[in-house]
Length: 586
Image 1 (cartoon, rainbow, N blue to C red):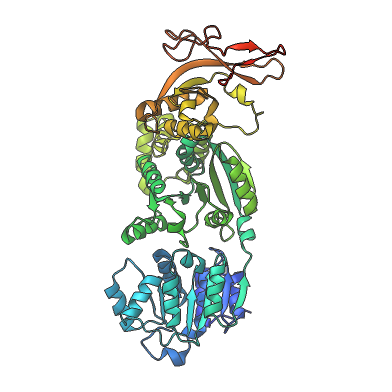
Image 2: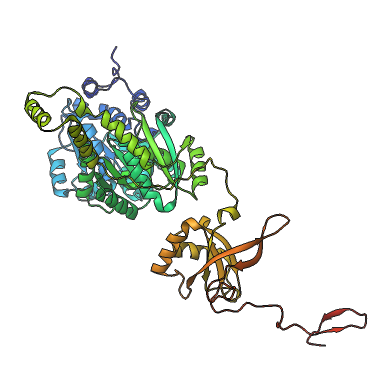
């Protein structure tokens, strides 16, 4: 008995030729409901594209209908150009033996060539909402003969603001059509859309996420915020994956990181919303054919894109929610392959990363970012296992091998091979190790050798730590953990910077100044907080090491104030013998 007996024979042959051995759970589920409307919850990588290709086959391959050229019989709507073109490619091999015609209508492509393809006749049309609506409005796309409509990534289309376009297309489709909605999640907007446009829809939920992520190893790498990109470089060098994807939070981050990787010798491409369609297509094709090994992308740009055999996923910026984490990470560890997912976490974001992992029900293995020594050891192992060392010289190489051995020693040739191997590798970065297993120092111990600075705002300016701290951090490009004690005085405020952050802080301040207009930041020097003898707590009084011209005070030229000489309120004895300050009314 064939594993694909429920599929059309031509489709079953195509699946076998493609290397499929059995249906995935989502494919089996949709084939069980051949004539019903379906609301399917399935993740990317579950085989859902082939699933709805199988589901609409009866409508497309009905001979009585196919003998009539012209209007399409099935319509697939996808949120992005890349996803729509990807669906078209999948349909082309799936329907190759049937003679069915597949066309696409997507933004960024020549609409005239799309209209000519529609005029010649198409059995299945795949497109994006805006371009499909444009062709319908202009009379180029006729929906009169539609037997099935598929909404792929319905939740994403609603998030991107395509509700009006979807409603326009669905309202213009025949009422007796079959409607299938596929979505990674089922938020309220999707269920309301399904309730309005589907008839007695059967819900299918495929819990393949747990099985898929069982093949993924999750690592958490805590780094200093200013070393985040260095950690990405070292992770790429350490794993040396044939294909990797690095997720960033914004377009500007994608642009900067991809440029830095390319400058360092990595074969990297960028994928973000600001690229033209030609640039996006070129980037994806570079990954598919192996000319590029690294794709740097945002979530939206990579939504629904199927990059083949990804071995490594790096989160350069933490995802916003557990669903995004799983969606990003699920691009590796597919079809029984093992995958690695690495989260690069700023030292002040570890708690958030732990909560994110718990919510996503994945286990993080905490480890320092790969060091130069670890990468060198990996390079050595890869060199010793190099496929270039396997086998004997062939006939075309033998003469050259003999000549090399006559002119050079074996050690010289081996050394040259090592040098050539290393010359092709981008340099690794020096990382500051942050160990989570060491006993945590007290706040005062961490700032034992802290350096003090002064900002020109105090009590007279109504200065408070809650607005001073962000100003200090933004001015020096540091995080709040690098700021120690803050002592607010009448006209200014003293604050302490961790010794490890002083150089970067002072360099940034010297270059750009204080971010708050009208305020200045000055270097004070070393100071000491007096310790309370009873409990070791820091007292509010500050004693500063003398600086030239400081007269035992951190501010140049300012004399210390003493109790002697201060104006005090006049006091008098009351008739009862008590003392109190004289009031103005007295």
